[in-house]
Image 1: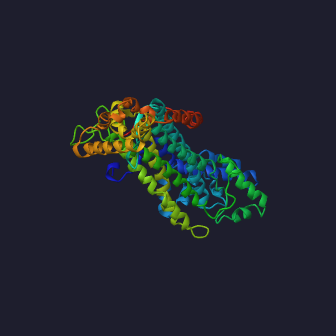
Image 2: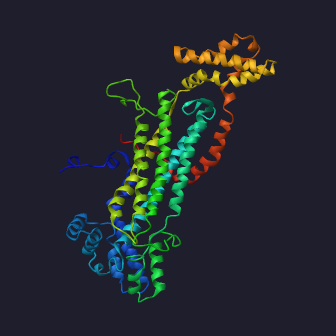
Image 3: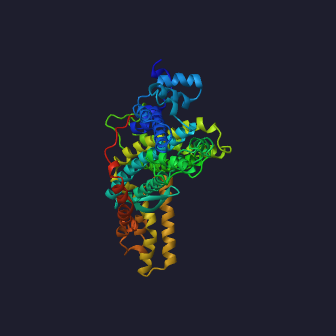
Amino acid sequence: MTFTDGFRSPLETRYASPQMRALWSDQRKFSTWRRLWLALAEAQHQLGLDITDEQLAELRAHLDDIDFEAAARYEAKFRHDVMAHIHALGDVAPKARPIIHLGATSQFVNCNTDLLLLRDSLALIAGKLARVIDALGTFAIEYRDLPTLAFTHYQPAQPTTVGKRATLWTQDFALALEDITHRRETLRFRGAKGTTGTQASFMALFDGDERKVEDLDRLVTEKMGWPADLRFPVTGQTYPRLVDAQVVNALAVAAAAAHKCATDIRLLSNRKEIEEPFGKHQVGSSAMAYKRNPMRCERICGMARFVMSLAQNPLNTAALQWFERTLDDSSNRRLVLPEAFLALDGVLEIMHNVASGLVVYEKTIRANLMAELPFMATENILMAAVQQGADRQEAHELIRQHSQAAAHAVKSEGLPNDLLQRLRGEPMFADIDLDAVLNPMAYVGRAPEQVDRFIADIVEPIRREYADALGDAAELKV
Protein backbone atom coordinates (compact mmCIF):
# COMPACT_ATOMS: atom_id res chain seq x y z
CA MET A 1 0.00 0.00 0.00
CA THR A 2 1.47 3.35 -1.03
CA PHE A 3 0.84 6.68 0.66
CA THR A 4 -1.62 7.54 -2.13
CA ASP A 5 -3.86 4.62 -1.18
CA GLY A 6 -4.75 5.98 2.25
CA PHE A 7 -5.74 9.27 3.84
CA ARG A 8 -3.04 11.80 4.63
CA SER A 9 -3.91 14.99 6.42
CA PRO A 10 -3.64 18.10 4.23
CA LEU A 11 -2.04 19.74 7.25
CA GLU A 12 0.95 17.54 6.47
CA THR A 13 0.84 17.51 2.69
CA ARG A 14 -0.27 21.07 1.89
CA TYR A 15 -0.32 23.56 4.72
CA ALA A 16 1.86 23.22 7.83
CA SER A 17 5.55 24.10 7.77
CA PRO A 18 8.32 21.49 8.13
CA GLN A 19 9.24 23.03 11.50
CA MET A 20 5.77 22.59 12.98
CA ARG A 21 5.38 19.11 11.50
CA ALA A 22 8.69 18.12 13.06
CA LEU A 23 7.58 19.39 16.46
CA TRP A 24 4.52 17.14 16.45
CA SER A 25 6.23 14.14 14.86
CA ASP A 26 6.55 10.71 16.42
CA GLN A 27 10.32 11.15 16.44
CA ARG A 28 10.09 14.31 18.56
CA LYS A 29 7.47 12.82 20.88
CA PHE A 30 9.16 9.56 21.66
CA SER A 31 12.70 10.92 21.81
CA THR A 32 11.35 13.37 24.40
CA TRP A 33 9.97 10.43 26.36
CA ARG A 34 13.47 8.98 26.43
CA ARG A 35 14.94 12.28 27.59
CA LEU A 36 12.40 12.37 30.40
CA TRP A 37 13.31 8.84 31.46
CA LEU A 38 16.95 9.86 31.43
CA ALA A 39 16.25 13.01 33.47
CA LEU A 40 14.28 10.94 36.00
CA ALA A 41 17.05 8.35 36.31
CA GLU A 42 19.76 11.04 36.59
CA ALA A 43 17.85 12.82 39.34
CA GLN A 44 17.22 9.56 41.20
CA HIS A 45 20.93 8.73 40.89
CA GLN A 46 21.88 12.16 42.29
CA LEU A 47 19.55 11.63 45.22
CA GLY A 48 21.07 8.30 46.16
CA LEU A 49 19.06 5.56 44.47
CA ASP A 50 20.95 2.51 43.23
CA ILE A 51 21.33 3.60 39.61
CA THR A 52 24.74 3.24 38.03
CA ASP A 53 26.70 5.49 35.70
CA GLU A 54 26.72 2.60 33.21
CA GLN A 55 22.92 2.48 33.18
CA LEU A 56 22.73 6.24 32.62
CA ALA A 57 25.28 6.00 29.82
CA GLU A 58 23.13 3.41 28.09
CA LEU A 59 20.11 5.67 28.25
CA ARG A 60 22.10 8.64 26.89
CA ALA A 61 23.33 6.53 23.98
CA HIS A 62 19.82 5.75 22.77
CA LEU A 63 17.84 8.97 22.96
CA ASP A 64 17.04 9.20 19.25
CA ASP A 65 17.55 5.78 17.63
CA ILE A 66 13.98 4.61 18.13
CA ASP A 67 12.95 1.30 16.61
CA PHE A 68 9.38 2.18 15.72
CA GLU A 69 8.65 -1.27 14.31
CA ALA A 70 9.67 -2.91 17.57
CA ALA A 71 7.56 -0.43 19.52
CA ALA A 72 4.57 -1.21 17.27
CA ARG A 73 4.98 -4.93 17.92
CA TYR A 74 5.10 -4.35 21.66
CA GLU A 75 2.04 -2.09 21.55
CA ALA A 76 0.08 -4.72 19.62
CA LYS A 77 0.96 -7.12 22.43
CA PHE A 78 0.50 -4.88 25.49
CA ARG A 79 -2.17 -2.47 24.15
CA HIS A 80 -0.22 0.27 25.96
CA ASP A 81 1.99 2.76 24.14
CA VAL A 82 4.16 3.74 27.10
CA MET A 83 4.93 0.15 28.03
CA ALA A 84 5.69 -0.55 24.37
CA HIS A 85 8.35 2.15 24.26
CA ILE A 86 9.77 1.16 27.63
CA HIS A 87 10.37 -2.32 26.24
CA ALA A 88 11.75 -0.98 22.95
CA LEU A 89 14.22 1.16 24.87
CA GLY A 90 15.05 -1.72 27.17
CA ASP A 91 16.00 -3.86 24.18
CA VAL A 92 18.81 -1.48 23.21
CA ALA A 93 19.68 -0.46 26.78
CA PRO A 94 19.48 -3.84 28.61
CA LYS A 95 21.49 -2.77 31.66
CA ALA A 96 19.19 0.20 32.15
CA ARG A 97 15.99 -1.79 31.60
CA PRO A 98 15.32 -2.37 35.35
CA ILE A 99 15.36 1.36 36.19
CA ILE A 100 13.50 2.85 33.20
CA HIS A 101 10.33 4.67 34.32
CA LEU A 102 11.14 3.94 38.00
CA GLY A 103 8.29 5.16 40.21
CA ALA A 104 6.60 6.98 37.33
CA THR A 105 3.18 6.79 35.74
CA SER A 106 2.45 7.03 32.02
CA GLN A 107 1.53 10.68 32.41
CA PHE A 108 5.05 11.44 33.55
CA VAL A 109 6.12 11.12 29.92
CA ASN A 110 2.83 11.99 28.26
CA CYS A 111 2.01 15.18 30.14
CA ASN A 112 5.53 16.52 30.40
CA THR A 113 6.15 15.85 26.71
CA ASP A 114 2.93 17.61 25.75
CA LEU A 115 3.92 20.63 27.82
CA LEU A 116 7.32 20.75 26.14
CA LEU A 117 5.64 20.54 22.73
CA LEU A 118 3.13 23.24 23.66
CA ARG A 119 5.94 25.52 24.82
CA ASP A 120 8.02 25.08 21.67
CA SER A 121 5.00 25.29 19.37
CA LEU A 122 3.85 28.51 21.02
CA ALA A 123 7.33 29.93 20.42
CA LEU A 124 7.14 29.02 16.74
CA ILE A 125 3.67 30.56 16.42
CA ALA A 126 4.88 33.72 18.17
CA GLY A 127 7.66 34.11 15.64
CA LYS A 128 5.26 33.69 12.75
CA LEU A 129 2.85 36.23 14.21
CA ALA A 130 5.79 38.63 14.51
CA ARG A 131 6.58 38.12 10.82
CA VAL A 132 3.01 39.00 9.85
CA ILE A 133 3.13 42.08 12.10
CA ASP A 134 6.42 43.13 10.53
CA ALA A 135 5.07 42.78 6.98
CA LEU A 136 1.83 44.62 7.72
CA GLY A 137 3.77 47.32 9.54
CA THR A 138 5.89 47.92 6.46
CA PHE A 139 2.73 48.10 4.35
CA ALA A 140 1.09 50.53 6.80
CA ILE A 141 4.01 52.95 6.64
CA GLU A 142 4.13 52.85 2.84
CA TYR A 143 0.44 53.81 2.59
CA ARG A 144 0.14 55.87 5.79
CA ASP A 145 -1.33 58.87 3.96
CA LEU A 146 -3.24 57.31 1.06
CA PRO A 147 -6.89 58.30 1.69
CA THR A 148 -9.48 55.61 1.24
CA LEU A 149 -13.17 55.21 1.88
CA ALA A 150 -13.85 53.75 5.30
CA PHE A 151 -16.84 51.55 6.10
CA THR A 152 -19.08 51.04 9.08
CA HIS A 153 -21.90 48.50 8.73
CA TYR A 154 -20.23 47.94 5.33
CA GLN A 155 -21.65 51.29 4.31
CA PRO A 156 -19.46 54.21 3.18
CA ALA A 157 -18.22 56.23 6.15
CA GLN A 158 -15.74 58.96 7.03
CA PRO A 159 -12.48 58.35 5.11
CA THR A 160 -9.40 56.78 6.65
CA THR A 161 -6.08 55.87 5.03
CA VAL A 162 -4.93 52.55 3.63
CA GLY A 163 -2.08 52.54 6.14
CA LYS A 164 -4.36 53.26 9.09
CA ARG A 165 -6.64 50.38 8.09
CA ALA A 166 -3.58 48.13 7.96
CA THR A 167 -2.72 49.09 11.53
CA LEU A 168 -6.12 47.74 12.61
CA TRP A 169 -5.18 44.37 11.12
CA THR A 170 -1.73 44.59 12.65
CA GLN A 171 -3.11 45.45 16.09
CA ASP A 172 -5.25 42.31 16.04
CA PHE A 173 -2.16 40.22 15.39
CA ALA A 174 -0.26 42.09 18.10
CA LEU A 175 -3.03 41.31 20.61
CA ALA A 176 -2.88 37.66 19.57
CA LEU A 177 0.91 37.67 19.98
CA GLU A 178 0.53 39.15 23.46
CA ASP A 179 -1.82 36.31 24.40
CA ILE A 180 0.40 33.63 22.89
CA THR A 181 3.45 35.04 24.67
CA HIS A 182 1.62 35.13 27.99
CA ARG A 183 0.56 31.51 27.63
CA ARG A 184 4.10 30.42 26.83
CA GLU A 185 5.75 32.40 29.60
CA THR A 186 3.32 31.20 32.28
CA LEU A 187 3.16 27.57 31.16
CA ARG A 188 3.97 25.24 34.05
CA PHE A 189 5.71 21.85 34.05
CA ARG A 190 4.05 18.79 35.55
CA GLY A 191 7.27 17.25 36.86
CA ALA A 192 7.35 14.01 38.86
CA LYS A 193 4.03 13.81 40.70
CA GLY A 194 3.20 10.11 40.68
CA THR A 195 0.14 8.12 39.76
CA THR A 196 -2.58 10.33 41.26
CA GLY A 197 -0.40 13.33 41.95
CA THR A 198 0.42 12.40 45.57
CA GLN A 199 4.04 11.31 44.84
CA ALA A 200 3.38 8.22 46.95
CA SER A 201 5.51 5.96 44.72
CA PHE A 202 8.48 8.30 45.04
CA MET A 203 7.98 8.52 48.80
CA ALA A 204 8.31 4.73 48.84
CA LEU A 205 11.49 4.81 46.74
CA PHE A 206 13.10 7.35 49.06
CA ASP A 207 11.94 5.72 52.31
CA GLY A 208 9.59 8.56 53.19
CA ASP A 209 12.18 11.32 52.71
CA GLU A 210 9.89 14.16 51.68
CA ARG A 211 12.77 16.52 50.93
CA LYS A 212 14.26 14.11 48.38
CA VAL A 213 10.91 13.67 46.71
CA GLU A 214 10.58 17.44 46.36
CA ASP A 215 14.17 17.63 45.08
CA LEU A 216 13.37 14.93 42.51
CA ASP A 217 10.47 16.98 41.16
CA ARG A 218 12.68 20.07 40.95
CA LEU A 219 15.68 18.29 39.38
CA VAL A 220 13.61 16.63 36.65
CA THR A 221 12.06 19.99 35.82
CA GLU A 222 15.45 21.70 35.58
CA LYS A 223 17.03 18.88 33.57
CA MET A 224 14.29 19.29 30.96
CA GLY A 225 15.19 22.95 30.57
CA TRP A 226 12.23 24.34 32.51
CA PRO A 227 12.47 26.95 35.29
CA ALA A 228 12.00 25.20 38.62
CA ASP A 229 9.67 27.93 39.86
CA LEU A 230 7.27 27.18 36.99
CA ARG A 231 6.02 23.81 38.22
CA PHE A 232 2.47 22.93 39.07
CA PRO A 233 2.35 22.80 42.87
CA VAL A 234 -0.29 20.07 42.71
CA THR A 235 -1.74 17.83 40.00
CA GLY A 236 -3.96 14.81 39.72
CA GLN A 237 -2.64 12.18 37.36
CA THR A 238 -2.35 14.82 34.63
CA TYR A 239 -1.63 18.50 34.44
CA PRO A 240 -4.88 20.53 34.52
CA ARG A 241 -6.63 20.13 31.19
CA LEU A 242 -7.74 23.74 31.47
CA VAL A 243 -4.24 24.54 30.25
CA ASP A 244 -5.08 22.97 26.89
CA ALA A 245 -8.21 25.13 26.72
CA GLN A 246 -6.19 28.26 27.48
CA VAL A 247 -3.62 27.44 24.81
CA VAL A 248 -6.07 26.43 22.07
CA ASN A 249 -8.20 29.49 22.74
CA ALA A 250 -5.11 31.67 22.33
CA LEU A 251 -4.55 29.97 18.98
CA ALA A 252 -8.19 30.63 18.08
CA VAL A 253 -7.72 34.33 18.80
CA ALA A 254 -4.79 34.42 16.37
CA ALA A 255 -6.89 32.56 13.82
CA ALA A 256 -9.71 35.09 14.21
CA ALA A 257 -7.24 37.92 13.58
CA ALA A 258 -6.12 36.25 10.37
CA HIS A 259 -9.70 35.55 9.29
CA LYS A 260 -10.72 39.18 9.79
CA CYS A 261 -7.71 40.51 7.87
CA ALA A 262 -8.14 38.04 5.01
CA THR A 263 -11.86 38.79 4.80
CA ASP A 264 -11.19 42.52 4.51
CA ILE A 265 -8.70 41.85 1.71
CA ARG A 266 -11.26 39.69 -0.08
CA LEU A 267 -13.81 42.52 0.13
CA LEU A 268 -11.25 45.04 -1.09
CA SER A 269 -10.39 42.69 -3.95
CA ASN A 270 -14.03 42.82 -5.03
CA ARG A 271 -13.78 46.62 -5.04
CA LYS A 272 -10.59 46.34 -7.14
CA GLU A 273 -8.67 48.36 -4.58
CA ILE A 274 -6.27 45.88 -2.98
CA GLU A 275 -5.43 42.32 -4.00
CA GLU A 276 -3.38 39.48 -2.65
CA PRO A 277 -0.32 38.52 -4.72
CA PHE A 278 -1.13 36.60 -7.90
CA GLY A 279 1.40 34.35 -9.62
CA LYS A 280 2.39 34.91 -13.24
CA HIS A 281 0.97 31.53 -14.26
CA GLN A 282 -1.69 31.25 -11.54
CA VAL A 283 -5.15 30.17 -12.64
CA GLY A 284 -8.04 31.96 -10.95
CA SER A 285 -10.83 29.81 -12.36
CA SER A 286 -10.96 26.70 -14.52
CA ALA A 287 -13.88 28.20 -16.45
CA MET A 288 -13.55 31.98 -16.21
CA ALA A 289 -10.01 32.66 -17.38
CA TYR A 290 -10.11 36.36 -16.54
CA LYS A 291 -10.66 35.82 -12.82
CA ARG A 292 -8.17 36.66 -10.08
CA ASN A 293 -9.85 34.89 -7.19
CA PRO A 294 -8.42 35.67 -3.72
CA MET A 295 -7.50 32.02 -3.24
CA ARG A 296 -4.86 32.57 -0.57
CA CYS A 297 -7.12 34.69 1.60
CA GLU A 298 -9.93 32.20 1.09
CA ARG A 299 -7.62 29.44 2.29
CA ILE A 300 -6.68 31.53 5.32
CA CYS A 301 -10.35 31.94 6.19
CA GLY A 302 -11.17 28.28 5.73
CA MET A 303 -8.30 27.04 7.89
CA ALA A 304 -8.78 29.80 10.47
CA ARG A 305 -12.40 28.74 10.92
CA PHE A 306 -11.16 25.21 11.62
CA VAL A 307 -8.84 26.48 14.37
CA MET A 308 -11.59 28.67 15.81
CA SER A 309 -13.95 25.69 15.87
CA LEU A 310 -11.50 23.80 18.09
CA ALA A 311 -11.71 26.36 20.90
CA GLN A 312 -14.74 24.71 22.51
CA ASN A 313 -13.32 21.21 22.40
CA PRO A 314 -10.64 21.38 25.13
CA LEU A 315 -13.08 23.25 27.37
CA ASN A 316 -15.35 20.21 27.20
CA THR A 317 -12.42 17.91 27.87
CA ALA A 318 -11.37 19.91 30.93
CA ALA A 319 -14.90 20.04 32.28
CA LEU A 320 -15.41 16.30 31.87
CA GLN A 321 -12.32 15.07 33.71
CA TRP A 322 -13.55 13.10 36.72
CA PHE A 323 -11.65 13.50 39.99
CA GLU A 324 -7.93 12.80 39.39
CA ARG A 325 -8.33 11.84 35.71
CA THR A 326 -10.30 9.86 33.13
CA LEU A 327 -8.92 8.53 29.86
CA ASP A 328 -11.46 10.07 27.51
CA ASP A 329 -9.11 13.03 27.11
CA SER A 330 -6.33 11.02 25.46
CA SER A 331 -7.76 10.20 22.03
CA ASN A 332 -9.32 13.65 21.78
CA ARG A 333 -6.11 15.51 22.62
CA ARG A 334 -4.13 13.50 20.07
CA LEU A 335 -6.25 15.26 17.44
CA VAL A 336 -6.97 18.69 18.87
CA LEU A 337 -3.56 19.83 20.09
CA PRO A 338 -1.42 19.04 17.04
CA GLU A 339 -4.10 19.97 14.51
CA ALA A 340 -4.75 23.35 16.14
CA PHE A 341 -1.06 24.21 15.91
CA LEU A 342 -0.51 22.73 12.44
CA ALA A 343 -3.53 24.53 11.00
CA LEU A 344 -2.67 27.91 12.52
CA ASP A 345 0.92 27.46 11.38
CA GLY A 346 -0.36 27.06 7.83
CA VAL A 347 -2.64 30.08 8.22
CA LEU A 348 0.25 32.29 9.32
CA GLU A 349 2.52 31.07 6.53
CA ILE A 350 -0.07 32.13 3.96
CA MET A 351 -0.90 35.32 5.86
CA HIS A 352 2.74 36.40 5.77
CA ASN A 353 2.91 35.65 2.06
CA VAL A 354 -0.17 37.80 1.44
CA ALA A 355 0.90 40.65 3.72
CA SER A 356 4.32 40.78 2.06
CA GLY A 357 2.90 41.07 -1.45
CA LEU A 358 -0.29 43.10 -1.31
CA VAL A 359 -1.08 44.89 -4.57
CA VAL A 360 -2.59 48.39 -4.21
CA TYR A 361 -4.53 50.15 -6.98
CA GLU A 362 -4.28 53.78 -5.92
CA LYS A 363 -6.32 55.29 -8.76
CA THR A 364 -9.23 52.96 -8.14
CA ILE A 365 -9.08 53.72 -4.43
CA ARG A 366 -9.26 57.44 -5.20
CA ALA A 367 -12.07 57.01 -7.74
CA ASN A 368 -14.15 55.00 -5.27
CA LEU A 369 -13.52 57.56 -2.57
CA MET A 370 -14.36 60.55 -4.74
CA ALA A 371 -17.62 58.93 -5.82
CA GLU A 372 -18.81 59.08 -2.20
CA LEU A 373 -16.92 62.06 -0.81
CA PRO A 374 -19.44 64.73 -1.94
CA PHE A 375 -22.03 63.26 0.41
CA MET A 376 -19.55 63.28 3.29
CA ALA A 377 -18.47 66.82 2.51
CA THR A 378 -21.94 68.25 2.92
CA GLU A 379 -21.43 69.15 6.58
CA ASN A 380 -18.30 71.15 5.69
CA ILE A 381 -20.17 72.81 2.81
CA LEU A 382 -23.01 73.68 5.18
CA MET A 383 -20.62 75.29 7.66
CA ALA A 384 -18.86 77.23 4.90
CA ALA A 385 -22.19 78.60 3.68
CA VAL A 386 -23.17 79.70 7.18
CA GLN A 387 -19.82 81.46 7.62
CA GLN A 388 -20.62 83.46 4.49
CA GLY A 389 -23.93 84.59 5.94
CA ALA A 390 -26.41 81.97 4.75
CA ASP A 391 -29.31 80.82 6.88
CA ARG A 392 -28.30 77.47 8.33
CA GLN A 393 -31.72 75.85 7.96
CA GLU A 394 -32.17 77.01 4.38
CA ALA A 395 -28.69 75.77 3.45
CA HIS A 396 -29.41 72.45 5.15
CA GLU A 397 -32.65 71.99 3.21
CA LEU A 398 -31.00 72.75 -0.14
CA ILE A 399 -28.20 70.29 0.55
CA ARG A 400 -30.71 67.65 1.69
CA GLN A 401 -32.81 67.98 -1.45
CA HIS A 402 -29.84 67.85 -3.81
CA SER A 403 -28.21 64.96 -1.86
CA GLN A 404 -31.37 62.86 -2.10
CA ALA A 405 -31.72 63.62 -5.79
CA ALA A 406 -28.06 62.77 -6.48
CA ALA A 407 -28.31 59.54 -4.48
CA HIS A 408 -31.42 58.55 -6.41
CA ALA A 409 -29.62 59.13 -9.72
CA VAL A 410 -26.69 56.99 -8.58
CA LYS A 411 -28.80 54.11 -7.26
CA SER A 412 -31.75 54.06 -9.63
CA GLU A 413 -30.20 55.23 -12.88
CA GLY A 414 -26.57 54.21 -12.51
CA LEU A 415 -25.36 57.77 -13.07
CA PRO A 416 -22.24 59.36 -11.55
CA ASN A 417 -22.56 61.31 -8.34
CA ASP A 418 -23.36 64.87 -9.52
CA LEU A 419 -24.04 66.47 -6.14
CA LEU A 420 -21.32 69.08 -6.57
CA GLN A 421 -22.63 70.14 -9.97
CA ARG A 422 -26.09 70.52 -8.46
CA LEU A 423 -24.77 72.64 -5.59
CA ARG A 424 -22.73 74.82 -7.94
CA GLY A 425 -25.99 75.84 -9.57
CA GLU A 426 -27.32 77.29 -6.30
CA PRO A 427 -26.55 81.01 -5.65
CA MET A 428 -26.18 80.25 -1.94
CA PHE A 429 -23.03 78.18 -2.62
CA ALA A 430 -21.63 80.22 -5.51
CA ASP A 431 -18.76 81.74 -3.51
CA ILE A 432 -17.67 78.48 -1.84
CA ASP A 433 -14.59 76.68 -3.23
CA LEU A 434 -16.25 73.28 -3.56
CA ASP A 435 -13.10 71.69 -5.00
CA ALA A 436 -11.14 72.61 -1.87
CA VAL A 437 -13.88 71.11 0.27
CA LEU A 438 -13.28 67.82 -1.56
CA ASN A 439 -9.62 67.42 -0.61
CA PRO A 440 -9.64 63.85 0.84
CA MET A 441 -6.84 64.60 3.30
CA ALA A 442 -9.15 67.05 5.04
CA TYR A 443 -11.27 64.11 6.19
CA VAL A 444 -8.76 61.52 7.44
CA GLY A 445 -8.07 63.22 10.77
CA ARG A 446 -4.89 61.99 12.46
CA ALA A 447 -4.78 58.71 10.53
CA PRO A 448 -1.20 59.20 9.17
CA GLU A 449 0.12 60.26 12.56
CA GLN A 450 -1.66 57.35 14.23
CA VAL A 451 0.17 55.01 11.86
CA ASP A 452 3.52 56.53 12.84
CA ARG A 453 2.76 56.23 16.53
CA PHE A 454 1.51 52.67 16.21
CA ILE A 455 4.62 51.54 14.34
CA ALA A 456 6.91 53.19 16.90
CA ASP A 457 5.07 51.95 20.00
CA ILE A 458 3.87 48.50 18.93
CA VAL A 459 5.58 47.20 15.79
CA GLU A 460 9.16 48.29 16.42
CA PRO A 461 9.41 46.61 19.85
CA ILE A 462 8.07 43.39 18.32
CA ARG A 463 10.61 43.66 15.51
CA ARG A 464 13.43 44.01 18.01
CA GLU A 465 12.24 41.12 20.17
CA TYR A 466 11.70 38.76 17.25
CA ALA A 467 14.51 39.88 14.96
CA ASP A 468 15.72 36.31 14.46
CA ALA A 469 12.27 35.21 13.25
CA LEU A 470 11.89 37.87 10.56
CA GLY A 471 13.85 36.12 7.82
CA ASP A 472 12.63 34.87 4.48
CA ALA A 473 9.46 32.79 4.45
CA ALA A 474 9.20 29.33 2.97
CA GLU A 475 7.67 28.98 -0.50
CA LEU A 476 3.98 28.10 -0.31
CA LYS A 477 3.21 24.56 -1.44
CA VAL A 478 -0.09 25.42 -3.11
